Image (cartoon, rainbow, N blue to C red; front, side, top):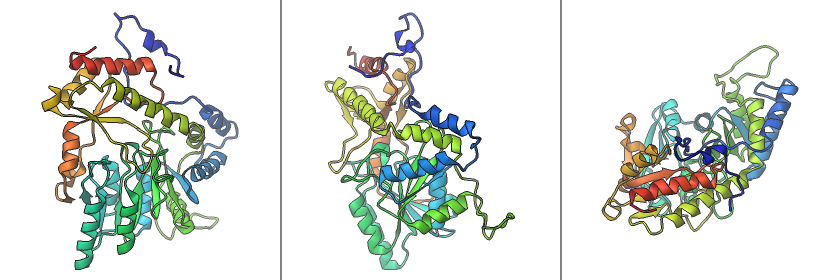
Length: 393
């Protein structure tokens, strides 16, 4: 039985148009308003204040990092990490291909060029073997990339031991994109703490949200200090405004940090709810031909940020797009798996290592509604609409 009571939208009469079920809607039900109200009551609405300090401290403790810096977005966090790592014009940065474009746009923002790596079928994340081969080859010709960005996809950690070993062997900076993976584990540790820096996103559809926002974590005190400095327009210590370098307006507000604190307190229950959605979908579709789900790696816990599955058209008698359109006709949002970045026009001239795995996942992959605030009744609607395509009830 669900611990979440049905909402009025779940109880509409059959003749009424059912409300939209979103892929991953924000879920605010704790102390978010309390902390943000405190910011208003004390007039701390700027990008400094008690909530900022507390959110950074609590987040660092949550993931096991020494330092955390709250910023305006996950993209801002990644941009700052690349700049501080010394990435610049003419450099190359290796990045997962099967991911959202924000994993790679900060590379372009620094004037560098991405090199994309295919996924492995067992985790859907960066193929560590392809990465290691590439770094060995580049070391032999003296053209190593400046950094490597593995993406922890859909709430599942990449296989960090071989990725970290390959980067360490060749002295390449490792920066983790954990935007989708807060609450996941890799061999008992949180993502984001295996390289020089890790970045997280609090966009409205993530495991926890601050409406917009992000976090950079690191064990390096100087890296954290540089992040704060650049994120606040790189103002020097002086009574007047003085700048020895240029920075950005990238800091998070104290109001949004209050929302984040309330969300972070509920992290485990949010992960548990998303995993419960995954288990329900997997059970409900067990008898349907040609349906397979994103596997969970044996080395850790996947948050199931989104429930992702693949459809084999030959076995299923339908395909991913027909299912997506059918769900949409029932006022249910679903979405194809990320289109690999090496297939995006903006990256047409970038090098790609492999490609067959991520291309197949995009061709056949579908993401289902997975929000922690989604009720059992809403999930049952998704299941019924999905099964109806197969002529099942």
